[in-house]
Each structure stands twice: as structure tokens, then as C-alpha cells.
Image (tube, rainbow, N blue to C red; front, top):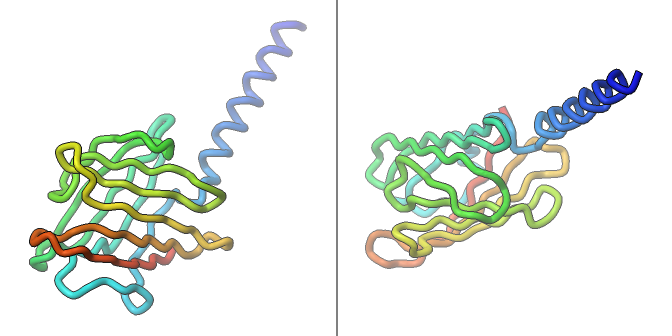
Length: 154
């Protein structure tokens, strides 16, 4: 009887953990809504962002267009705990940190060689259908640039 209780408790905890991850509002594919976005001319654009779960972390795959109009692709796997996690495929950053700052609100920092290259916020709408990413950084010429990208859930 004691073994049965322990097993049922373990199953309940596992089910709760899986349900929490599966219900995270970030998980899924987000497509850039260019008409609602404010992205400076000549700035790179992330046209789609896909979050999946890998173990106890999130995997983020970003497809887009670089500043020269060519295709871009980068990936990040980490937690929303504010710690730096490696980024691959992004010429402007090699580390990314995302931290949950409130319900559906996150802060974002990108770094290259230990130096902060971009900061921003991520906000998910209460209905979970829209994701807004506002970033500030410097371009290759050292000019400060702010961008607001609005994404629709697919």
C-alpha cells in the first residue's frame, strides 16, 4: 500500500510538471506581423520564432533576414532564469539571457564576447495570441537602434 501511494504521488508530480511546461505561453511558433512592427530600414528581421521544450529547458529557433537581405538562422537553448546561455548562428551575439519578470513579461539580454550588444523586453498578450519584442542595441556602425517586432501565434 505504501509503495502504491508513493507511485501515485510520483505520477501526479510528473503529470503536473509536464502540464506546466506544455501550458507555457511561449511554446509554439510565432510569425512576424510586419504591418504591426516597427523595424528600422536595414535592420535584421526575425520572421519566425519557434519555442519547444527540451528536457527542463526551452529551445528557441529563429529564422529571418539579415541586414543585407540574406537568410539568417540562430538557435538558443536555456531557461528563463536570467543566466547566459549559448547562441549559435547569430553574428551579433554568442550568449543570450532571458528572465521572467512578471506574468507574460520577460527581459532579454544578448552579449558578444562578454559585452552587451542588445537589451529588450518580451511581452505576451493576455490571450496568448500576440508576442511583442522590443529591443535596443547598436548596429555595425555603432549607431543606437530600437526595434519593436510583433508576432502572431501560428
